[in-house]
Image (cartoon, rainbow, N blue to C red):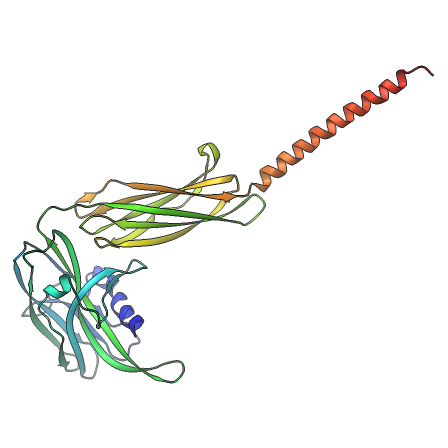
Length: 323
């Protein structure tokens, strides 16, 4: 059930970023949408994006549309957002108590019956606490529909399908946009006699108090700093303050040169603009079979030449002896 709830909310994040209302995915038995609205209906906002001082109040509306041909009953409420392990914008489960922006939204769980093809515009207030910390806070306003689904084993399972609109709030005060890479691990798997694949896993962390995103890049170097390959730019999704994200990328065709280093560089940005980059490296052992084979061949040739010369001198010495 928890997985289904998170998927229902997370799958709509991309839709909301593109400026369209979040709605239940195609194929669901019921279809509904959630979006910022007004007393007269939706106003074109992709998300609730607010800025204010501690103690300030905001009055707003959330619209919930029934896109189906039959009546639906939705439960409307707000909760905190977080960055999921896959980098998605995720929301707490219904059983978890919000303690940040979700608790500042005056929307206690309440059921609404929405006729087929109709929309309701529900007013709410958001009050910024006097002790709210400066920076970005995130939440979601959820419209959930409870139902029953048949599991693969044939049992009936209660599910809670959720659709949400994002809420962002920037609290006035000092902002500290910053991000870093806290660890890099590398592992080499030989794909041939001379080269293989280097799998690089790194941890990106938002160490500031505002949202950050950016791009990362991996460069692989061998002894004496010789370049052995790298990756294209890797998109790092939006990270909420304090969020950590583990990312993995495979660099193929890396020459097996012994100890190789994977240097990961992260170039973050926020609403304030481009931020100072961060970099960190990790090492892996790439068995240099080709190099070792070449050295062994050279050593063999040298030994053979030395043996031939010694043999020749010996034979010449024997021939020079008196009969």
